[in-house]
Length: 422
Ligand code: NAD
Image 1 (cartoon, rainbow, N blue to C red):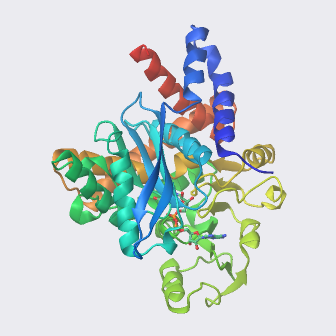
Image 2 (image 1 turned 90 degrees about the horizontal axis):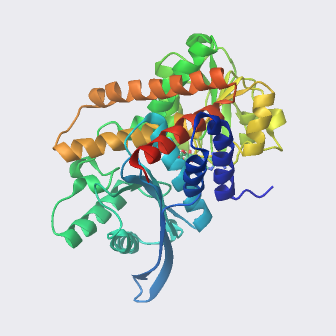
């Protein structure tokens, strides 16, 4: 089945609205707000004209979708990928609104993207493209208006170029306008680990609810990039058993499922050999096999749409923590719920990244620089509160965890609209 992410995002909002409607006296106002939330407030598009190293020029289609800013400035990353399209950018901007509302950070939702395969550009071409994007969005962004960040295939260096371009346009320093910056330019300590660490705070809470003891809880993780690696390291530090890992080349599973893998050693092995396969004490598996292992917790931390209506019947984990964006399709989500498999949704479990981006913004506004310990001390209660809020809605409203999260987030946004009288 082909998934249009924007249609999925609107469908999820409509489902949450059905459950929320009885709570509002003024139904007309409630429905008007929900209608408004189905489309972004603004979608900016441009063809960026970039000079290539050979002297020719190329055009690149670029977008910035600003969904809703009723709770605070728009917030969301910028993606460089050849599959970027308008519906994807719009859907991701809706999900950012719910993600920020879920942890309670004072932002709305936005997303940006450029249709480009960055691996085909030289360093200088990438810089010119990034500066052209910053120039295009400069009239629409700002510390109190819209705060972009890195996403797929963008990083601290790209944020540094964009910040420099933006500041040269406005003629003053304004570091809080971009997050995910290098430390030297006002980035936050702990941002690298933040998404994985935030997911492990969620894991700890889920394990308590499901009465799982860390030293006896087995975990399989798909993806060993920023998110998967730090999730694995932090989970192992907490005493959980990380028994299987994978990357785009395939995976490994421990020969003894009662013994966890040494994740740091696996990564060192990958750096030396180019693949994690062949690591001692393990056997090689495919990514499909990893998804169907009989573990306690399955963590998709690589790609979207990896658990679908086609392979959901193979899932043998007791619970799923979505660390990638959109790894479970809506059809599969319903089927997991029917089978009694808990699935913590991405807008909650990977919200540690945007939360530490918010901390970066706060530090920039005040000229502070917090230690890593301070950052994590502030991150943990936000993730734990968000989890508990979701769990209480799940138990009182008897809905699956994604719907519980959506009800909580959409309600916060609708209530903010009502208070403003928009
Ligand atoms: P990354 O590029 O650092 O790592 C991606 C990992 O996925 C790599 O290990 C890669 O080998 C693996 N992979 C690629 N194709 C695969 C395949 N077909 N099968 C199995 N593994 C495959 O990316 P990341 O920053 O770790 O992000 C991963 C996911 O988490 C994405 O969906 C991203 O949108 C989401 N996310 C990231 C952050 C963040 O802070 N980095 C925050 C929120 C959500």
